[in-house]
Amino acid sequence: MRQKIGYVAILVGDYDESLSFYIGVLGFDLIEDTMRAGGKRWILVAPRGTAGTCLLLAKASTLEQAERIGNQTGGRVFLFLHTDDFWRDYHDMQSRGVQFMEQPRQELYGTVCVFVDLYGNRWDLLELKNYGPKG
Image 1 (tube, rainbow, N blue to C red):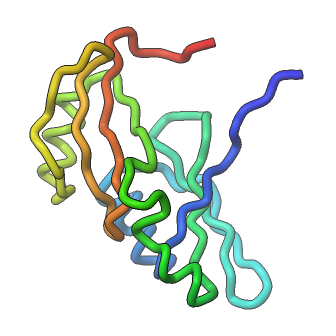
Image 2 (image 1 turned 135 degrees about the vertical axis):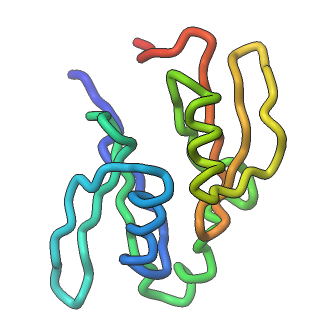
């Protein structure tokens, strides 16, 4: 049996604010936005043109969840946005107001730079030296 990770839930404070960031700033595609009971929405976004793992924008509904918005991993990088052209996406993201936490750097595995989303979650923008699916 083949398996894959379908969705990764990311806690958000507001659905529409989050959609504005992921679609308007990062350029992601809206995969689904469906109303659910109790005013909840099932919202899936993914990097443009991909058919892989989606982010599930999950609005915090408890105080405990709200306290974790923007820091789901204790300050570590949470998500890794792979690209086939680091400098194209880096400059595009800068022009859209994405906040980068460091200067781009070359590593043995590729070109990388940490940025934060609208809530402060840390991401890597990453072009692997041998870009493409593994396995």
